[in-house]
Image 1 (tube, rainbow, N blue to C red):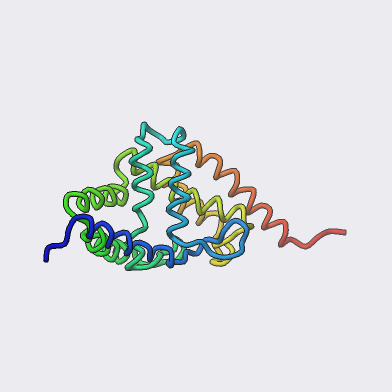
Image 2: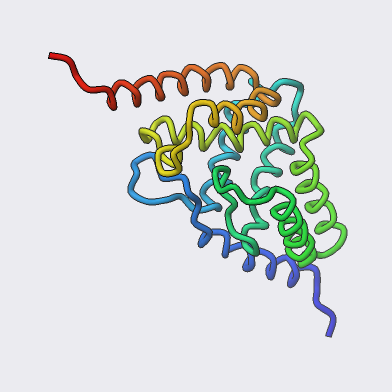
Length: 202
């Protein structure tokens, strides 16, 4: 018997429930636990809704939100790849593109093809919408690390220079004003860390 479009859509919606079980490295701001990828995607959509005026170019906020809701769905199959994990970017990309084909292929056409194209646009980061979405995807964990006293930076021994190189280009390209805020935060954070490590004087 042929599967209807509605049955395919409901299957996809059940499948993506699994994103709630993918635990990321970033903690919640209250540091009570790690966030999951579904929470991360929702939070990024809110960032796009509220911060769209800081994009480097003219963006369609609705499209940016759609990208951010979709961008980590592939982690259902491949898990989270932490920015400080050191995994080969080529291997990561290969695994994620296969996952995208499978997951969006669960949907009826043309809907599945449209969402796959949107996910691919985010990954390529060539359009203004995608550059801004990518910038927010770097900005949110940076904010979390600063406001949790180090977060994944402390856990992984990440230096100020590494923060600048791993976050800076992507955020600056898509949201330069947000990066100027980040620079101040990051410098202050590492200066505070250094002063806390220095022996006190009497």
